[in-house]
Length: 352
Image (tube, rainbow, N blue to C red; front, side, top):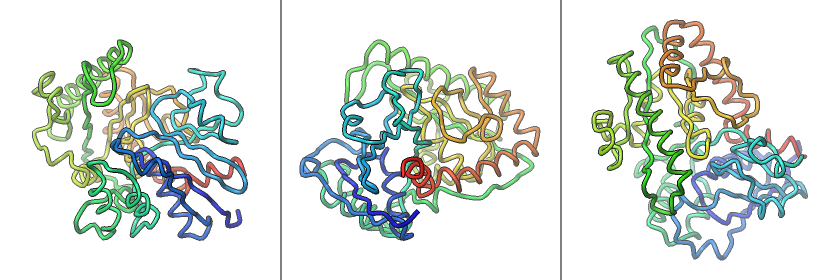
């Protein structure tokens, strides 16, 4: 594909969109796109934290209007849909809303938080012009400090590695519990409360059984929120430093079998993408969302109950051939489908 002019309408700096921003920067550096970024005036007044900003990004490319929706929910944003020629959906699940999944709605792929290596002028521009949030200065420093001397940045090179086969496999599952009574930013409905309770029960039970089965070869537990300490004090991770981003990624890198559970709205969480990027063998909770070219057995083993989670981890532990084959498949998948520039090109090639 020839070099194309790409106009990005950066109306927010949501963490969910950072992977797309990173892919755009990479393609611009490679000379495959000519990226220009427009920052909306209204966005500059926002005081909403990055973590809960809208997860919608509009792009014009090759004369076509594209929309990327990286929200957890499988619902289509009809207002955004009306403004676009082609709509890419992270949590792609037509069975939940077939009337809204028209022929120009496409699966986006796996989502995770990742920044470009080196200095990113587009990222710096967004952070310099946006927001009066508490995170503003920290994010600006992160963008400016491309050598990582002041603030760790989860860059492309930090969240990717080749397969490593170890005879004594180590198992990892770090998880959070969702508060079933309140949320910082919105009212929890009865349906959302029930879903959070189900997620919490499943995660806690998985951790209990994995600890019993693998002993000192298991690393994991619940992140030490007030809610988790109250609900399951014995399952909370003792080492708080383990859950900082840099330490967490080092921990993933040193483990072989990684567990992923389904998130809010039935979404596939960021951990799944991180595991694939670091060429891990994966046991993942069965999910209804569709991810292009991702296959059960080849890229992950699925579970529906906590005991099935343990059984699948045992299967990977006992068969080094199965485990290493999956690691190699996930490394190939990362290079072709998940690395931010590759993922975006897969999307663009469908509509150009």
